Length: 516
Image (tube, rainbow, N blue to C red; front, side):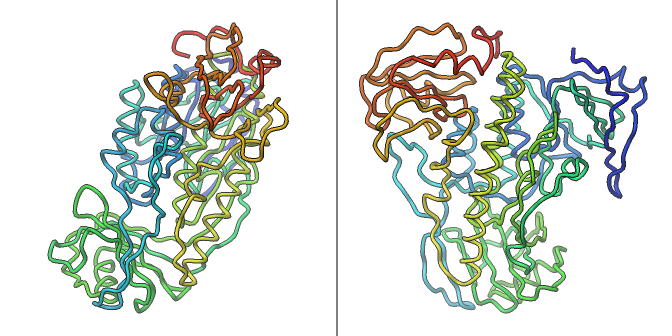
């Protein structure tokens, strides 16, 4: 049971419909009946679901609350990059994602009713031993969330729908969260995964520093088209010179749905998301007739913005996903960066809550993820502006997120010297490859750390939470010992075991409890 001493005397915040207001104290009778858990996760989008899955497999109790009465219904973030596919493989969700997704279609330009050129927006690569998932996968965000939710339930977790966070407060020992259901939930940590307009972030007074990438509004909608419509499902159709602003129709896998994106040249335009208005927009700007739109399933408007929270943590409250950084949709970076926030945070919470690691381990979350978010924001902003200026910028390795790493992290220790320029170093993503009858990713899969010996002996280990493997030789790794973190990055590397025990001590108990 988590101690709650001091909570009644700690200032908190209330989250109301008209903004935030201070709450000086909380009545004793409300905290006495609090629901107990380890982590409260606010928001059941991809970030919250991935974090809940990772905590569930670690035996960490988590309450995932969502103010809506169902999962998000739209296609908004529709691309799963190669690195995120590796994450979902580890979490056991990739089979469902692959079954529901498809390769990205080739782009097809139109001028009125005339077909023009065709090209690949996404560079295509062949899988290799080191990179088994080489290409971005097209899958609507709504379907991604359904697969993640199903995986969470397989692990015994769930989502509390219709439960909005109405207030929270924290002491040095715990967080108390108040829900619209009338419950008070007591936890060790609260994670805000509640989107770009995060009420938790605003309640904490954490600012967002950024810029408007494009002041012109945009419409995004999911539409079902008639089979007689002029567009086929083999291409992503684009009218770059459409009157009033460019229009794109991307076929979504698994049916007759398309994602519609329409730009508005007029910065002051009021975007009407009503089904009638969506039909009229397509009829006005493309050769499709209004009657070709059988159904408008979901619609929203937005302006492309790039912004990042000034910090990702306030005591026992942690920001993740869009609550911490907001991206332009160009390059498919937002959802993927959010997934990897959760993946980075999940194993650290697990080590602190189940293995006795010092709470200071959580400081590395911001130290690692904030620079990554800044780099990715720069990529998506640059791609958006290039596309807006008419450049057919192909998305290649820079958007796949395989090259992102943590060489400058406080958790990264490289003890080898004289390495070649292209050598794998501590902080880098650990490549896949053959290992015995299986693959390295099979060895890494799970909540544990892995010690990989390549061309050197395995030292004795007292830590029961570390799995070991040995390769006689494998060129991508070179020679040495590599401690692979639970999120698939090399944390420590050395020529022998000197210093390894001290490094492992930062991650907690040598003999983890069952399920940890």
